[in-house]
Image 1 (cartoon, protein in one colour):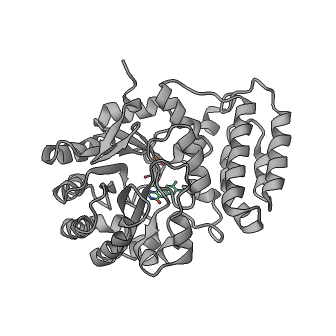
Image 2: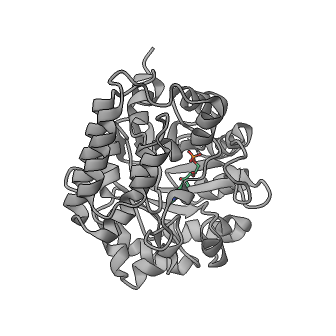
Length: 369
Ligand SMILES: Cc1cc2nc3c(=O)[nH]c(=O)nc-3n(C[C@H](O)[C@H](O)[C@H](O)COP(=O)(O)O)c2cc1C
């Protein structure tokens, strides 16, 4: 039987080659990282979450975040905002830009975002949520989607999916946690399924996407089997592991050799240099990727600490090559680690602690300015 995730799917009139998407990731899903994930087969990728205010006031940083590389065949944009009017104004602009699909972020739990009445705060009130989606729908005919959690502080996932479909979105994504939960709580598949069934019950051709705790083919399959979702969205599972797209597409584990692992890191470094140049601020921005790539090897703590200090891409290249040279060629990443270490790396782990909040765009915080 053909791998479910490898099958094409349409979001409205947008044809996607498969059903494995890379989430919009603030501070992470920039051009270099997206290019790598696309090369490994991601069927849809997004720029980092944008703030409607930053779009409306033509913030320089946000303009840079909206760039699209010529190699990117399909690209989505995600935006959140404090009022339906602000969001609609921003989407009117984004609609004219080089994006194939637009997503409304109604799931971000970051305090600053919620305080600004953005992200997951939008889902607190069903009527308000409806106004938001309707206002955005009115200004774009591009495929439109929403991304939300199963609730803010109480579960109202069915309301969120119904609000979305009644206002004619072509797709919605459900992250199976409330905004009050953190990564140590497992995603709730039954609640995702409730949201999907409510949405499909109203509009059977809406594309439904399951999100949360997908780290390999098995967990992708579990998400699909337990929720009935049409597609999946990967977030933390891609950090330091773009091979996840290939693994899910092939339906079996992918274990890159040390040489392949190094090759991918060096390629991302090259893309990073092409996009940002080799300088101190953007190298600091890239440190988190280095640390994620360096995970899963026994005794790599010192190496990771060194990577946290690098100030140039050249230095990072030298460190990675040096470290790779010390590894046995047959070494398999994550194998040979204790169960506890592996669990920490995979489940319940919050990557924001690897991100430099001063230099970075962080997890959806600075983009609210
Ligand atoms: C570093 C980081 C940045 C994120 N940025 C965004 C974002 O910009 N937009 C969004 O909708 N979700 C964002 N999220 C949430 C994820 O897309 C996803 O919903 C959540 O991490 C659950 O999926 P996971 O368990 O596979 O990580 C972010 C998550 C992380 C870890």
